[in-house]
Length: 124
Picture 1 (cartoon, rainbow, N blue to C red):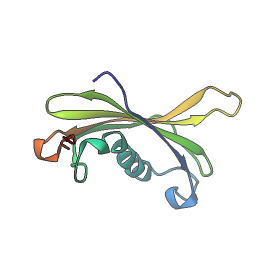
Picture 2: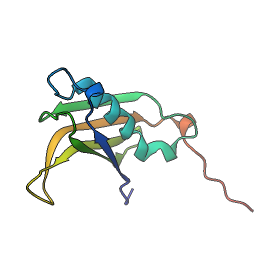
Picture 3: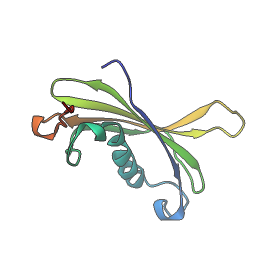
Picture 4: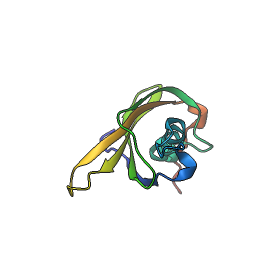
């Protein structure tokens, strides 16, 4: 696999996904990250993407109400048994145009079952 499939999804922290003090609740972020992790591999499956086989999720910093986050998902590896998708959630630093703070990172493994694979057929 020579090309990497990237996905960037904006996410705004609202009162619905934060606690009373305005901190983003980690389980809400995990739910969104889990959904975005399926985007780079959806094209490889005929039906829904299978359940996670393995994952690592780590919060590095807090996010607050009205923060604009970017969820970046990238298919990084395809083995004989699974796909690995790396996800990074960042927040732009206000004083800099090109620098971002990492809010969380995650690595998801999706099983590569043969019955889920999409067959490529060509017209004759």
